[in-house]
Amino acid sequence: MKNVGFIVKENPEANRSAKRVAVALRKYGAKPLFEPKQFAAAELIIAVGGDGTLLHAARIAGPHGLPLFGINLGRLGFLSEVDLDAAI
View 1 (cartoon, rainbow, N blue to C red):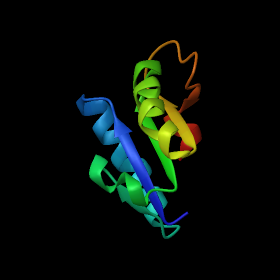
View 2 (view 1 turned 180 degrees about the vertical axis):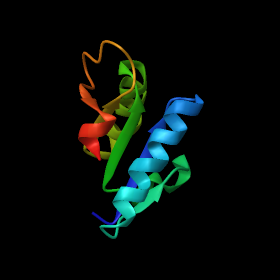
View 3 (view 1 turned 60 degrees about the horizontal axis):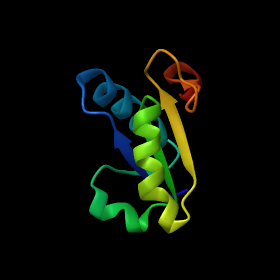
View 4 (view 1 turned 90 degrees about the vertical axis):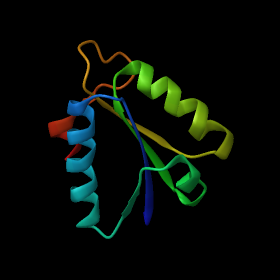
């Protein structure tokens, strides 16, 4: 994948986590996209946060037919059960 969009919960922990994932993806030649206006070029959307963030990301990714990957930073993680350590 060349372009990966990020939808991140608005808190410092989520921002740090998203940056860690972005650094890991760059090693494989992927370009992280953090601006929603860039998502038209994305091939995948990564949601970093909890289930609410994943649901928000699904509303954005769905109409474009983009696959969605959720990284859970919350407690329950019913929808996004992959934690940061497993994702990197």
